[in-house]
Length: 600
Image (tube, rainbow, N blue to C red; front, side, top):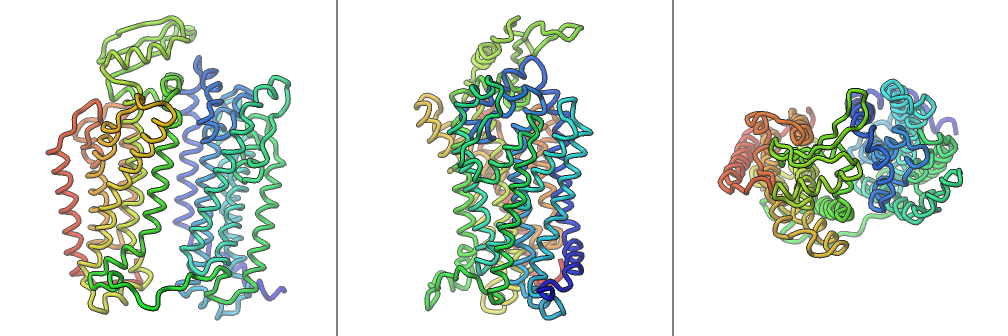
């Protein structure tokens, strides 16, 4: 048995060296968001509106998205921060671990690296063992840093025990999904299957938790009034994402769910090791579906676009389903959107500032509440001394400015979701580089496939995906919104236009990615830095006043913000031409350069 793990330590050091960039970026990004938002959200949430925010967490739509109303237990900022941030951060950590484990197990096996390692004096289980130890180290580092930095950045309601529990919850969740990814890497015969099964498990656990939390939401008030810790539904406890919320970090600080999560990770990992010891190399317990005796004509066409579609169609279908679900999730709160926005300074800034509207809370020199002012285009139009009238004041200001609260909210959602749609567009274009690095492009181009037509197939998929993603987003938001709140809540023509207007900006990002693949393949990572810039421009720009020239350094800065501005078809046509030009230059550069599958 000991020989099965021979040289695990050396392999672990090697894997950690391979992860020094990827995982470091993941951890730093997570810490920047989780810890960086602690003081920022404190300024926004703490004040006269905090009690309203805590009460708002009982909204069924919010319960289904972010978990049970933990903030009700203690009515503190620490509990409210856990309510808003813990579940989605745990989801992100789960995604990080799925990528990490599949990359070092089934993907290595597909690329022949596993066979090379096994030819050396290493144990049969050493590769999987080293992968899991790497995940343990990565998650332990993330847990400790999150806990210590959160404690340092937090206020008095975020103690050391609760902060370390927050970090431990993230680490334990990561290990659970690392174990599931290791298990699916044994069951599936390829990396794509292992990734797909892992993400399906992640989604199923999320919806199980949502269903369980919704079942128990009505009983929370009674339990809290009785001074008891609110119970959780069995569906929530089955899900690791439900169990992580049961820690009640900063609202009770229960450590026992951490041990259950670690035990679950150990049990699933043990099953993965057992299956790994049984199976043959390059084989999985779930056999691949038998293919056709002969490929279809469109798959063997010399332009290569049939193969491109085959490689990307499943990802496209998954992204389309995801965008519909995102649109539908926001539709569920359309009926209470005025209450939701009025009680949240951050959403007021994101949604109202760009429309020239501001809801200002004025305090006395002693810090006591004095009044609330409603501003439109730099002028005070109404004032109230009753903080409970803030919703009425918001609706009055929006109507005075000539808008509806639903349209402004939908416009903000379309603006933010355009960023989400950018990710698959970029990934579809980058798939050409991934195929090149996997030494598959050389084999294809050795035949009669034209290089321009080959890369053009990936460009075509990126360009087709952009309008499809925006369209299904609009359908999801409008469809469920009308089903829940009636046809008067939104206009489909407006929603569709507000979504589709971002398509040229998505095309520019796809064209820029094709340009990098064709002209500078080693610099394709630059596109993610530019994506981050677009992200910051949207979130900061909607609440601030950036100069016009600065906003237009990003393609999304050229897009008119409906309903505040009218659609300028000339500008959109110009952006589209820029996207096509970038794509054409990339194709020409790709035709001239050598295919390098090894370096970069």
